[in-house]
Amino acid sequence: MQHEPSEVTEFPANRPAGCPFAPPEELERIRDRSPVVRITFPDGHRGWLVTGYAQTRAMAADRRISSRYELVHFPYPGMEGVEIPPAPVGDLTGIDPPEHTRYRKLLTGKFTVRRMRQLTERVEQITAEHLDAMARQGPEADLVPAFAHPVPAVMICELLGVPYADRETFQRHAAKVGNPEFAPEEQGAAYVALMEYLNELVVAKRAEPGDDMLSDLTTSDLTDEELGGIGTFLLGAGLDTTANMIALGTFALLRNPDQLAILRAEPEIAEQAVEELLRYLSVAHTGVRAAVEDIELDGQVIKAGESVIFSLQAANWDPAKFAEPDKLDLRRNAAGHLAFGHGIHQCLGQQLARVEMRVAIPALFARFPTLRLAVPPEEVPMRPFQQNVYGVQRLPVTWDEG
Image (cartoon, rainbow, N blue to C red; front, side, top):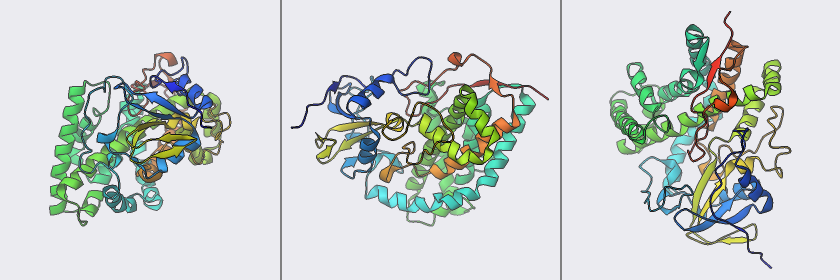
């Protein structure tokens, strides 16, 4: 006989005091009690919350669930009555096959493991340049604008073929998008400026192609509008996430000196260490989809039209998959983590993000062996959990010169 699941009246969003890296405690309690439960959304919609690893993985891979923004109810207060428009042209996150399949096929070949690893030397150069700049301006810095943000920002510029003369302006706008330090109006204006710039860049690439991804894509059947939209999507998907992984990963290592000591002593485990940091931190922590057909999951029936929240972080901290998941263990085999999602919407640029993290984080600690927080850890300002991407707002650090 099917049991009626307990119902959650609101999406848990309060992280435990003293551990900014852990999922909200209530999410973990829900997962351990019942990994698929009813939840009431702020607008009154009754949908589902999925928190278990196996259940989240199955849901993310199910073709009977849609990513279309206009079909989804959102779990955060303040979204009541807000009609979400369809995804803008080129936004792969908010569309389904066959449209999604067409874009994905064109882009997948641009992000192969081999191609991204070929970029390692360039990532090393960019990393060294920003570490040099930190050393010149030190011995204190806010790691977010000094290092964590500009490294992936420069790589995005290179992938898209942004001319050097435009990069300062481009990065200034990019630094505002999704950044809670700026008012929503400023973020919106920066986003519009970037869209307009990328649309102009597409026209320039058609006229005079270069050795970059946008130029490559001008030979496809994509329209200028689609190319500009894809450029905007790649910027949004590849910058904020990686920047926050670098900054939050640094914070986590500084708070776990035993693990930092392992990384220093065993640099050959950098690849494994990055996978564990991805699992442990899960900066893109929550996904929301809508069922387009009835789906049976873990003894429950999700009806067509019902929205489903899945907590990637609660899944990545599921003890049924990872032993002692609350411990950062750089020697752990974290293969199979869901930090990049799963299924057809799994992060397209995950290999580039891995390369950037494998290079940037060890290089930072190698360059500044005495790197430490410049403020007490509890004073490091964190992004609100409701942000799509979790992380630090600022990370004040200091080091000994000489």
